[in-house]
Amino acid sequence: MSTTSDTIPSISALLSLSDSQYRIYDIGRRVDKISKEQFERIEAAQLPYPYPIQGHALLAIAFWQKQSTSPYLWFVKLPLDERGLLNQGARNHFIAIIIEALGENLSVNPTEQQEALLKKNPYHFTPAQYKLAAVNSIVSKSLKQSASKFYVPAQTYLSGVNGWDAWPEVGVQGVADFAFRLSETDNAKVLTDALHILPEEVLLPLCSALENIILPADVIQQITTRFQLAQSNEKHTESIALLRALASSTQNPFSEQCITNLLTRDSLNNDILIIIAGRLWPILADEALLFIYLEHLTKENDNELFSAIFKDLVAIPMIRPVLLQAIRSPKRSPALAQAIGMLFKD
Image (cartoon, rainbow, N blue to C red; front, top):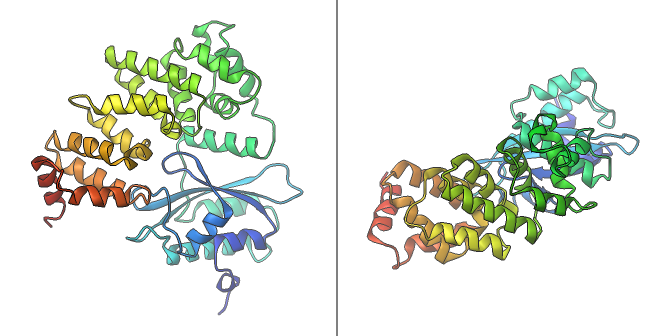
Protein backbone atom coordinates (compact mmCIF):
# COMPACT_ATOMS: atom_id res chain seq x y z
CA MET A 1 0.00 0.00 0.00
CA SER A 2 1.42 3.38 -1.03
CA THR A 3 1.96 6.01 1.65
CA THR A 4 2.59 9.71 1.55
CA SER A 5 6.22 9.00 2.47
CA ASP A 6 6.75 7.38 -0.95
CA THR A 7 6.35 10.79 -2.54
CA ILE A 8 8.46 12.76 -0.05
CA PRO A 9 12.11 12.28 -1.02
CA SER A 10 13.84 14.24 1.74
CA ILE A 11 13.56 15.92 5.14
CA SER A 12 13.87 19.26 3.34
CA ALA A 13 10.87 18.37 1.16
CA LEU A 14 8.93 17.17 4.22
CA LEU A 15 9.46 20.49 5.98
CA SER A 16 8.60 22.49 2.86
CA LEU A 17 5.44 20.43 2.31
CA SER A 18 4.35 21.22 5.86
CA ASP A 19 4.67 24.92 4.98
CA SER A 20 7.31 25.27 7.70
CA GLN A 21 10.13 27.73 8.00
CA TYR A 22 13.18 25.84 9.25
CA ARG A 23 16.83 25.93 10.25
CA ILE A 24 19.29 23.02 10.36
CA TYR A 25 22.22 22.78 12.78
CA ASP A 26 24.93 20.21 13.30
CA ILE A 27 25.29 19.53 17.03
CA GLY A 28 27.67 16.58 17.00
CA ARG A 29 30.89 18.52 17.49
CA ARG A 30 29.93 22.16 17.92
CA VAL A 31 26.66 23.89 17.07
CA ASP A 32 27.16 24.81 13.40
CA LYS A 33 24.45 26.07 11.07
CA ILE A 34 24.01 24.08 7.87
CA SER A 35 22.48 26.13 5.05
CA LYS A 36 19.34 24.83 3.34
CA GLU A 37 21.21 24.50 0.04
CA GLN A 38 24.02 22.54 1.72
CA PHE A 39 21.54 20.30 3.53
CA GLU A 40 19.66 19.56 0.29
CA ARG A 41 22.94 18.46 -1.30
CA ILE A 42 23.78 16.34 1.77
CA GLU A 43 20.36 14.70 1.54
CA ALA A 44 20.83 14.03 -2.18
CA ALA A 45 24.15 12.27 -1.38
CA GLN A 46 26.00 14.88 -3.45
CA LEU A 47 28.07 16.07 -0.51
CA PRO A 48 29.65 14.23 2.44
CA TYR A 49 28.40 15.32 5.82
CA PRO A 50 30.78 18.10 6.97
CA TYR A 51 30.86 17.34 10.71
CA PRO A 52 30.60 13.56 11.18
CA ILE A 53 30.99 12.09 14.63
CA GLN A 54 31.28 8.33 15.25
CA GLY A 55 29.81 7.58 11.83
CA HIS A 56 26.70 9.71 12.34
CA ALA A 57 25.18 13.08 11.60
CA LEU A 58 23.71 14.66 14.74
CA LEU A 59 21.18 17.30 13.74
CA ALA A 60 18.98 19.84 15.43
CA ILE A 61 16.07 20.78 13.18
CA ALA A 62 14.14 23.89 14.25
CA PHE A 63 10.88 24.47 12.39
CA TRP A 64 7.80 26.59 12.77
CA GLN A 65 4.66 27.68 10.96
CA LYS A 66 4.31 31.36 10.10
CA GLN A 67 1.57 31.90 12.68
CA SER A 68 3.59 30.16 15.41
CA THR A 69 5.55 32.12 18.01
CA SER A 70 7.99 29.39 18.99
CA PRO A 71 9.70 26.68 16.92
CA TYR A 72 9.64 22.94 17.46
CA LEU A 73 12.97 21.17 17.81
CA TRP A 74 13.80 17.73 16.51
CA PHE A 75 17.11 16.13 17.50
CA VAL A 76 17.97 13.56 14.86
CA LYS A 77 20.84 11.07 14.67
CA LEU A 78 21.30 9.55 11.21
CA PRO A 79 23.99 7.06 10.16
CA LEU A 80 26.53 7.87 7.43
CA ASP A 81 28.02 5.40 4.97
CA GLU A 82 31.74 4.72 4.59
CA ARG A 83 32.09 7.70 2.21
CA GLY A 84 30.52 10.04 4.78
CA LEU A 85 27.29 10.32 2.80
CA LEU A 86 23.90 10.27 4.52
CA ASN A 87 22.40 6.78 4.74
CA GLN A 88 19.39 7.12 2.43
CA GLY A 89 17.49 4.16 3.88
CA ALA A 90 17.71 5.51 7.44
CA ARG A 91 16.67 8.98 6.28
CA ASN A 92 13.65 7.54 4.43
CA HIS A 93 12.71 5.47 7.48
CA PHE A 94 12.86 8.61 9.63
CA ILE A 95 10.51 10.42 7.20
CA ALA A 96 8.08 7.48 7.26
CA ILE A 97 8.00 7.55 11.09
CA ILE A 98 7.33 11.31 11.07
CA ILE A 99 4.43 10.92 8.65
CA GLU A 100 3.00 8.02 10.64
CA ALA A 101 3.14 10.10 13.81
CA LEU A 102 1.82 13.35 12.35
CA GLY A 103 -0.60 12.04 9.74
CA GLU A 104 -0.89 13.46 6.25
CA ASN A 105 -1.70 16.99 7.36
CA LEU A 106 1.85 18.07 8.16
CA SER A 107 0.95 21.73 8.55
CA VAL A 108 -0.68 21.22 11.95
CA ASN A 109 1.33 21.84 15.10
CA PRO A 110 2.12 18.46 16.71
CA THR A 111 0.00 17.53 19.72
CA GLU A 112 1.65 16.28 22.90
CA GLN A 113 0.76 12.73 21.92
CA GLN A 114 2.31 13.16 18.48
CA GLU A 115 5.41 14.73 20.03
CA ALA A 116 5.72 11.71 22.33
CA LEU A 117 5.45 9.37 19.32
CA LEU A 118 8.11 11.33 17.46
CA LYS A 119 10.47 11.13 20.42
CA LYS A 120 10.14 7.35 20.54
CA ASN A 121 11.54 6.91 17.05
CA PRO A 122 14.99 5.30 16.83
CA TYR A 123 16.59 8.35 15.23
CA HIS A 124 15.66 10.72 18.04
CA PHE A 125 18.28 11.50 20.69
CA THR A 126 18.50 13.80 23.69
CA PRO A 127 21.48 16.15 23.57
CA ALA A 128 23.54 17.08 26.62
CA GLN A 129 22.17 20.01 28.64
CA TYR A 130 24.83 22.46 27.42
CA LYS A 131 24.13 21.55 23.76
CA LEU A 132 20.39 21.98 24.29
CA ALA A 133 21.00 25.38 25.90
CA ALA A 134 23.20 26.40 22.95
CA VAL A 135 20.57 25.35 20.40
CA ASN A 136 17.84 27.24 22.30
CA SER A 137 20.06 30.34 22.35
CA ILE A 138 21.07 30.26 18.70
CA VAL A 139 17.50 29.64 17.53
CA SER A 140 16.01 32.48 19.59
CA LYS A 141 18.81 34.81 18.45
CA SER A 142 18.43 33.91 14.76
CA LEU A 143 14.65 34.40 14.92
CA LYS A 144 15.14 37.77 16.64
CA GLN A 145 13.25 36.56 19.71
CA SER A 146 13.92 37.62 23.28
CA ALA A 147 16.48 35.70 25.31
CA SER A 148 15.27 33.43 28.10
CA LYS A 149 14.48 34.73 31.57
CA PHE A 150 17.91 33.43 32.66
CA TYR A 151 19.81 35.88 30.43
CA VAL A 152 19.65 39.01 32.61
CA PRO A 153 20.81 37.23 35.81
CA ALA A 154 23.76 35.77 33.88
CA GLN A 155 24.61 39.17 32.37
CA THR A 156 24.37 40.80 35.82
CA TYR A 157 26.59 38.14 37.39
CA LEU A 158 29.25 38.39 34.66
CA SER A 159 29.38 42.16 35.16
CA GLY A 160 30.62 41.40 38.71
CA VAL A 161 28.25 43.76 40.50
CA ASN A 162 27.00 41.08 42.92
CA GLY A 163 30.43 39.55 43.54
CA TRP A 164 31.91 36.37 42.05
CA ASP A 165 30.53 34.16 44.84
CA ALA A 166 26.97 34.72 43.57
CA TRP A 167 27.39 32.03 40.88
CA PRO A 168 24.57 29.76 42.22
CA GLU A 169 22.04 32.23 40.75
CA VAL A 170 23.41 31.66 37.23
CA GLY A 171 21.83 28.99 34.98
CA VAL A 172 23.34 27.14 32.01
CA GLN A 173 20.69 28.61 29.69
CA GLY A 174 21.48 32.15 30.85
CA VAL A 175 25.20 31.64 30.23
CA ALA A 176 24.45 30.29 26.73
CA ASP A 177 22.15 33.25 25.99
CA PHE A 178 24.90 35.63 27.06
CA ALA A 179 27.49 33.89 24.86
CA PHE A 180 25.30 33.97 21.77
CA ARG A 181 24.54 37.66 22.38
CA LEU A 182 28.17 38.66 22.76
CA SER A 183 27.78 41.31 20.07
CA GLU A 184 24.93 43.03 21.95
CA THR A 185 25.35 46.04 24.28
CA ASP A 186 28.78 45.79 25.94
CA ASN A 187 28.68 42.02 26.52
CA ALA A 188 32.06 41.40 24.87
CA LYS A 189 33.74 43.91 27.18
CA VAL A 190 31.91 42.47 30.21
CA LEU A 191 33.23 39.02 29.29
CA THR A 192 36.77 40.27 28.60
CA ASP A 193 36.89 41.90 32.03
CA ALA A 194 35.45 38.84 33.82
CA LEU A 195 37.37 35.97 32.23
CA HIS A 196 40.46 36.19 34.42
CA ILE A 197 38.50 35.87 37.66
CA LEU A 198 35.44 33.69 36.99
CA PRO A 199 35.08 30.65 39.25
CA GLU A 200 35.10 27.24 37.58
CA GLU A 201 31.37 26.77 38.30
CA VAL A 202 30.60 29.46 35.71
CA LEU A 203 33.71 29.22 33.54
CA LEU A 204 33.03 25.61 32.49
CA PRO A 205 29.47 26.09 31.14
CA LEU A 206 30.54 29.42 29.65
CA CYS A 207 33.37 27.77 27.70
CA SER A 208 30.95 25.09 26.48
CA ALA A 209 28.81 27.87 24.99
CA LEU A 210 31.74 29.91 23.62
CA GLU A 211 33.00 26.93 21.61
CA ASN A 212 30.15 27.56 19.14
CA ILE A 213 30.97 31.23 18.51
CA ILE A 214 33.63 33.09 16.51
CA LEU A 215 35.05 35.19 19.34
CA PRO A 216 36.45 38.74 19.36
CA ALA A 217 40.24 39.02 19.65
CA ASP A 218 40.11 40.57 23.15
CA VAL A 219 38.09 37.63 24.47
CA ILE A 220 40.46 35.12 22.83
CA GLN A 221 43.45 36.85 24.41
CA GLN A 222 41.89 36.50 27.86
CA ILE A 223 41.01 32.84 27.25
CA THR A 224 44.54 31.96 26.07
CA THR A 225 46.12 33.86 28.98
CA ARG A 226 43.98 32.00 31.50
CA PHE A 227 44.63 28.72 29.66
CA GLN A 228 48.39 29.18 30.02
CA LEU A 229 47.96 29.96 33.71
CA ALA A 230 45.73 26.90 34.22
CA GLN A 231 48.35 24.75 32.48
CA SER A 232 51.11 26.13 34.72
CA ASN A 233 49.02 25.40 37.82
CA GLU A 234 47.99 21.95 36.53
CA LYS A 235 44.29 22.82 36.59
CA HIS A 236 43.33 20.07 34.18
CA THR A 237 39.54 20.54 34.00
CA GLU A 238 39.90 24.28 33.54
CA SER A 239 42.54 23.83 30.83
CA ILE A 240 40.32 21.52 28.80
CA ALA A 241 37.33 23.88 29.07
CA LEU A 242 39.35 26.92 27.99
CA LEU A 243 40.82 25.03 25.04
CA ARG A 244 37.32 24.01 23.93
CA ALA A 245 36.23 27.65 24.07
CA LEU A 246 38.51 28.32 21.09
CA ALA A 247 36.78 25.70 18.90
CA SER A 248 35.06 28.12 16.49
CA SER A 249 37.94 30.61 16.61
CA THR A 250 40.90 28.46 15.52
CA GLN A 251 41.68 30.79 12.60
CA ASN A 252 42.33 33.75 14.89
CA PRO A 253 46.10 34.42 15.23
CA PHE A 254 45.89 34.33 19.06
CA SER A 255 44.19 30.91 18.94
CA GLU A 256 46.63 29.61 16.33
CA GLN A 257 49.60 30.72 18.44
CA CYS A 258 48.17 29.17 21.60
CA ILE A 259 47.43 25.80 19.96
CA THR A 260 50.74 25.78 18.06
CA ASN A 261 52.64 26.45 21.30
CA LEU A 262 50.70 23.62 22.92
CA LEU A 263 51.57 21.20 20.12
CA THR A 264 55.29 22.01 20.34
CA ARG A 265 55.47 20.77 23.94
CA ASP A 266 57.23 17.51 24.67
CA SER A 267 54.06 15.70 25.70
CA LEU A 268 50.30 16.18 25.82
CA ASN A 269 47.78 14.21 27.84
CA ASN A 270 45.10 12.18 26.10
CA ASP A 271 42.25 14.54 27.00
CA ILE A 272 43.96 17.43 25.21
CA LEU A 273 44.70 15.23 22.18
CA ILE A 274 41.03 14.20 22.06
CA ILE A 275 39.80 17.82 22.36
CA ILE A 276 42.07 18.92 19.50
CA ALA A 277 40.61 16.23 17.21
CA GLY A 278 37.04 16.59 18.42
CA ARG A 279 36.72 20.38 18.66
CA LEU A 280 39.77 22.11 17.20
CA TRP A 281 40.17 19.97 14.08
CA PRO A 282 40.36 22.93 11.62
CA ILE A 283 43.87 23.66 12.97
CA LEU A 284 44.94 20.23 11.68
CA ALA A 285 44.29 21.22 8.06
CA ASP A 286 47.82 22.65 8.27
CA GLU A 287 50.01 19.70 7.29
CA ALA A 288 52.94 20.74 9.50
CA LEU A 289 50.70 20.93 12.59
CA LEU A 290 48.97 17.68 11.63
CA PHE A 291 52.36 15.90 11.56
CA ILE A 292 53.26 17.26 15.01
CA TYR A 293 49.85 16.17 16.29
CA LEU A 294 50.18 12.65 14.86
CA GLU A 295 53.64 12.30 16.41
CA HIS A 296 52.11 13.18 19.81
CA LEU A 297 49.58 10.40 19.32
CA THR A 298 52.35 7.83 18.84
CA LYS A 299 54.27 8.75 22.02
CA GLU A 300 52.12 6.72 24.40
CA ASN A 301 52.25 3.62 22.20
CA ASP A 302 48.46 3.54 22.57
CA ASN A 303 47.34 1.91 19.32
CA GLU A 304 43.71 2.02 20.39
CA LEU A 305 43.78 5.81 20.89
CA PHE A 306 45.70 6.35 17.64
CA SER A 307 43.20 4.21 15.73
CA ALA A 308 40.14 5.91 17.27
CA ILE A 309 41.40 9.43 16.57
CA PHE A 310 42.59 8.52 13.07
CA LYS A 311 39.12 7.15 12.22
CA ASP A 312 37.54 10.29 13.66
CA LEU A 313 39.76 12.68 11.69
CA VAL A 314 39.75 10.81 8.39
CA ALA A 315 35.94 11.03 8.33
CA ILE A 316 36.01 14.86 8.40
CA PRO A 317 35.96 16.06 4.75
CA MET A 318 38.11 19.10 5.59
CA ILE A 319 40.88 16.96 7.14
CA ARG A 320 40.67 13.73 5.11
CA PRO A 321 42.84 14.73 2.11
CA VAL A 322 45.57 16.27 4.31
CA LEU A 323 45.59 13.22 6.60
CA LEU A 324 45.75 10.70 3.73
CA GLN A 325 48.62 12.65 2.22
CA ALA A 326 50.41 12.81 5.58
CA ILE A 327 50.29 9.06 6.22
CA ARG A 328 52.01 8.43 2.87
CA SER A 329 54.63 11.12 3.34
CA PRO A 330 58.33 10.16 3.49
CA LYS A 331 58.65 12.73 6.31
CA ARG A 332 56.93 10.40 8.80
CA SER A 333 58.98 9.21 11.72
CA PRO A 334 59.54 5.44 12.25
CA ALA A 335 57.11 5.57 15.21
CA LEU A 336 54.41 7.20 13.07
CA ALA A 337 55.03 4.76 10.22
CA GLN A 338 54.63 1.88 12.68
CA ALA A 339 51.39 3.31 14.13
CA ILE A 340 49.98 3.76 10.63
CA GLY A 341 51.03 0.21 9.76
CA MET A 342 49.07 -1.09 12.76
CA LEU A 343 45.93 0.62 11.38
CA PHE A 344 46.01 -1.54 8.26
CA LYS A 345 47.25 -4.73 9.89
CA ASP A 346 43.79 -6.26 10.01
